[in-house]
Image 1: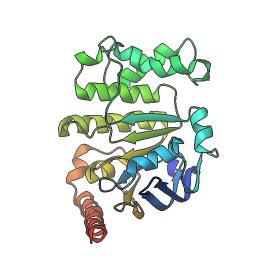
Image 2: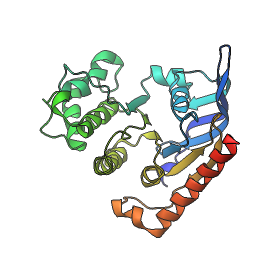
Image 3: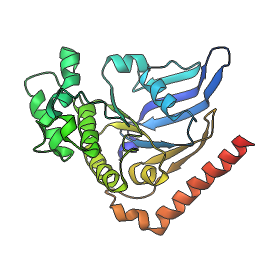
Image 4: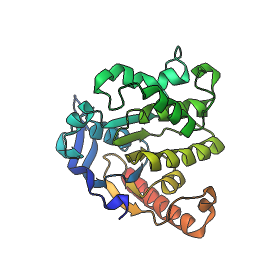
Length: 268
């Protein structure tokens, strides 16, 4: 049985989000989505369609104005309180006065006994995670002494340190060059296989979404609606040259056509 068959990890039922004020803005509308435990889901869509809002709703940082969300049988607020989430953003958000190891250890030190990895072996785990993301030997380097790609790897290791069941990633590699992004895609898949986390990965890159994910969710322009949830048929592990295969290109063109058609309709 594959991880995608292990049950419903995250369920969004008729979820909508409208921001109030004098001129209310509806960011998301009628989102029905089930993400099985351990599945890697990518989310693509035009700028402003509510991709980041979707992550904030799942994490409990925002409360939907319509519908309900369940995270491994809990409300998002309960899941966040129980340290179910790890976050990785486009900006690594590292503390410049802490070395790489210190940045990775910081969440556990903040959470204290609430951290699932609290204990004498936490530093050993942090060092192993840094090694898993290709930073063996850089544990004592400050952020200013590391490249953007290396900082992104520290942020990924930090998100994994307390073994959260759900990893929420908001364009984590969007600011990086193509070659660095490719390397980090491979390392992300490697650590994901070990962590067995449920992943929601927001990206503007259709190719990145297909390469990484089990399924790709396509959102329409604001208000974001689900246009399609496409299953990615390629087995794992996936080599980088998979992107040059005809079947990969065909799926990428199909999803791009959906985006272009819906964007045109939304602008009309």
